Length: 483
Ligand SMILES: Cc1cc2nc3c(=O)[nH]c(=O)nc-3n(C[C@H](O)[C@H](O)[C@H](O)COP(=O)(O)OP(=O)(O)OC[C@H]3O[C@@H](n4cnc5c(N)ncnc54)[C@H](O)[C@@H]3O)c2cc1C
Image (cartoon, rainbow, N blue to C red; front, top):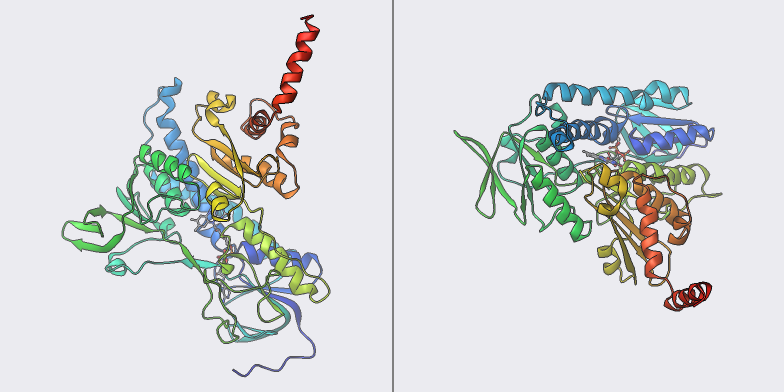
């Protein structure tokens, strides 16, 4: 491939490709550091998180939770008629949530912040040149933040049958009476439960023997039981063989022989980084085993001026990870060879917004075992947390891993109401080397869910109290009693 000549001067310091979570943070930071930066976006501003990911899913889940809670109202002494969700109104609420957040990611906002925003499809023609719909932009560096897209299984009949993914499920006009979901990862579990709570008869088909395979087995079991309690027919260790249609309607035929009839089919079998069609192959930019862009620890590709961040890396597919990676990528892109920032994702929280929520940071038991990390586990059950008891939300637990005999936190898993909020305390503690003893020494307001962190630390403390010191104390008090 012949590259256009490297210019002596560049029109800008940085071109960022993609205005999703990663690209927006990259462009914002570059402008804040007074670089001349152009942000190129082919689709809607805000990318997946705003338009088809976090924002719509959490808005839908919010409505679904309310429907589920009102069904339980009678148990709390509030006799009320069963809710009759109006799906069109629920989807209008989802769109309203997107519209309310959209100004944060808008062209106007970023232009005001000093970013030049170009709408169009970018193609990298050289490490110093990006083509945007025929117009060539010269730049000292490039940050690729092109995101990921749904990964579709090779399933006979799928294309012909009609299906939705996390990108298109938001266009459903009416609540499907029967929804089949393929995939038991975070997206499959969150949406299966939400649709069930809104009134669909949901069947979730998962190839693996358990849901949420990155979590410990007991977490998977708890979520499977909870989904079942919400009416989801959870089919584990079952794989789809084909999508079939006849006069009776459409169905998902399983390898095991069963057929799952459906009115809508949601394919949630993972996402793959967008790495084709915009110049990476021509420039010899390689990929990782997870099909993400290959980089060094500074998120720099084989071309010293090209960096990557966000879902396109195929690493941690979260909005907060994308934003965190964007910081490293931009500092490298703007300041290499004078300064660059090593990307560190050792303390990266992950939350699945099922009910109860599942939140994790650092190691869980299966990761500790896989990595042969010596560890011990301290547990605290939500059933022992006063706030959870009064809220009738006692499902779940906190589990903290520490090195044997030490209070340094290797990782924490929280399952329960507001687990996504609770995990922040463990992430903070891990990031700043705060051990369980110092968590125990921190006053937490009563009655809160946050107290679960301190009570877990208390459980660790009790398990590590020195028997000799306790014997000595008992003798001291006996002496004080005059005995
Ligand atoms: C249903 C669902 C729920 C989710 N919920 C959560 C959650 O609760 N919390 C969380 O942390 N994460 C969640 N995620 C994941 C989160 O949405 C992503 O991790 C995050 O949006 C990734 O941001 P990104 O900037 O890397 O990619 P994207 O947001 O995909 O942005 C990439 C952008 O690049 C543009 N682009 C690509 N190629 C080009 C090109 N050649 N030229 C110009 N533009 C281009 C695309 O149009 C796109 O807008 C969820 C995902 C899904 C699917």
